[in-house]
Every structure is written in structure tokens, then in C-alpha cells.
Length: 280
Image (cartoon, rainbow, N blue to C red; front, side):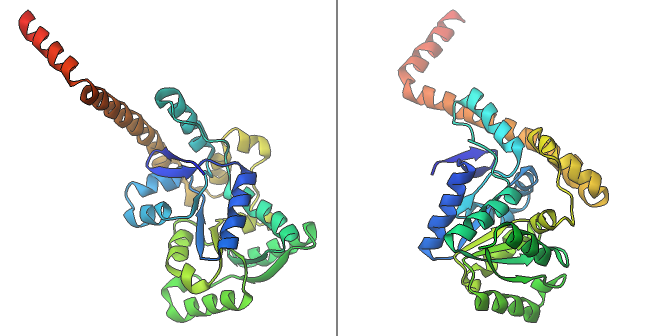
């Protein structure tokens, strides 16, 4: 798979079916693999959160959750000539698609996290939609469980005993990515994916934006209207920093190309400088 640099992050350039196939290969590999789905807020956060940036950079599969990443890739294609992203692969869409695929492929899945009742509600909805889906467990840990060794150990033990092929982790970002990175080897699960609020979307606890709003790139606005007190800083204060992040990439790439041309033609540069001196 090809990876493209979007701002400060290398992103896998895949379609949704290709992402599902990539997860299949990771399951067959067997070693614990981490899948992340960065959006604009994640890219901006990585500029000042090196621990989070390191976790995303080390992920086995990095999928573009936000539509602005696709738009930025097309702008970078026009300016720099690098390929554009094939499509948005949103984590909430990937969650449902992987459950659908798991029902036919026989993969075992576990829903971890979410608001109280969300994981169990998502299991009820998805097993009705996909009767062959094997949800081998759900668990909603208490708030702050990751700071309590006993609660954390209990959660990991429940996951190991269930032996899923895919662990969907709905703890919110960056908490879910940091937890996966720290605990993936102890969970003994082939694939671990952070899916944020996806359980709530599926079971109806949280209303997802209509499809036309998603396609217009305004899903963030729909979410902010639902939870303004929690999300306004994310979208109105941090989100705009994505623009200078992409601008810096374009300017940096342009400067690098000019330096490459000068290095490739030193004699021409020397001649030009001599002519300039003669004229003066």
C-alpha cells in the first residue's frame, strides 16, 4: 500500500474495501496490530503532543477519517504533484463494514468502551443486522480505569479470555490510541482499532449527521451542535490550524525542490552568479 504525507502524518491511500482487506491480512499475520483513523483534530494535536504523534506514526494501518484530509490531498496533488487520497475511510463507517465482513469471514469481535450501554446496544443492533456476527464480548470500563491497575488488568483479562480477532476500542481520542499502544501485546488480539463514538452512533445514543452533511464535509458542525460545551474548542480553536499545517507542507516541499535543482545544476548557478556580478 502507498502512504501519502498529509501535513505531518503519513496516511495509507486505500479505499474502504482495500482497508477491509488490509485488516484481513493483519488478522492472518497474528501479531498485535494497531489501526488508527486520524482526522483534522488528530493532525493538529500531533503538532504539540509528541507521544500521540509517535503512536500514530507507529500504527500498522493509518486511515483518513476526515474529509478535509481528502481535500488537502487533492490540493497537494495540484501544487506538488503527489497522488490524492482515493477516498475517506471514516472510523465509524469502517466499524460497521468490518462487522459485516466479520459475519461472513467468521472473525470474532469485541466491543470495548463507549458510554454505558452503548457497546451492548451496538451488539444488539449489529447482530440483528448481521445474524452470523460473533460478538464475543462487550465491556464498558469505569471512568479512569486506565489509571487503576486493578481495573485495567480486569479489562485486559476479559478481552484475552474472549479471544477476539478484532478489538474495537471506543474510548475517544487520544485516550484510545494511547491505551491500545500500551496494552496491545497484553490483550493478545490480532487487530485493535480505535473507533471513538461509533458504538453510540450504531445503537442510537448519539445521532450521526445525515449522509449529505457527511459528504459536504460538515459532520464536525453537526457534532458540535450536539455537544457544544465539549467540542467547540476542538473545532473552532484547534481545527483552523490544519490550514497552516498544509501550507507549511507545500512551502517546505517547494523549497526542497528548489534546493534539489540548485544541487543538480551547480555550474549553471555559478554562471548566473557571475553574470550578476558583471552587471553590477
